[in-house]
Length: 151
Image (cartoon, rainbow, N blue to C red; front, side, top):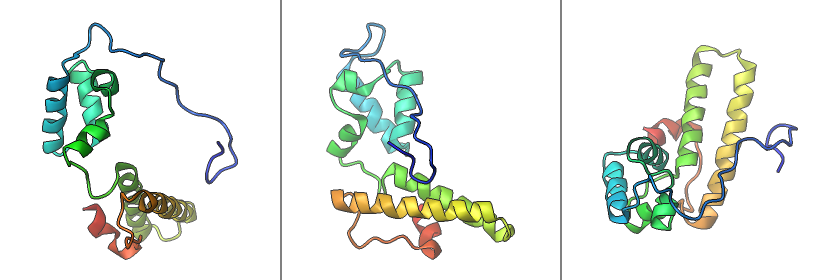
């Protein structure tokens, strides 16, 4: 698939190896892994951070291989979902950083353009989440209310 805001058509990143069961050295106790996920979520970690902590500190390379479902599904079953999806929140944080930068550097046209592109991605992603019901249908992106939504 082509890039959204540039002419490139390359694929980036690597693909995971095709594996259907957890490695022998990994922690495969489903109840313990679920408790770890819920405790880390209660501490305020986002799903990406939870996956990294499980991989690096608790020998769980892939939650799906141990539990048979994704980490987000475990959180949704236990009704631990953030107000905004993680990818939308990261785009809003990026937009906020760009706004703060442009307040002190008004003539920075490159970052002004990047702010426009980031806001375009936010609006596009919000349409997707509204269609899936993960975001309120009345929600709209407003630059002046952004600081309140992120913090």
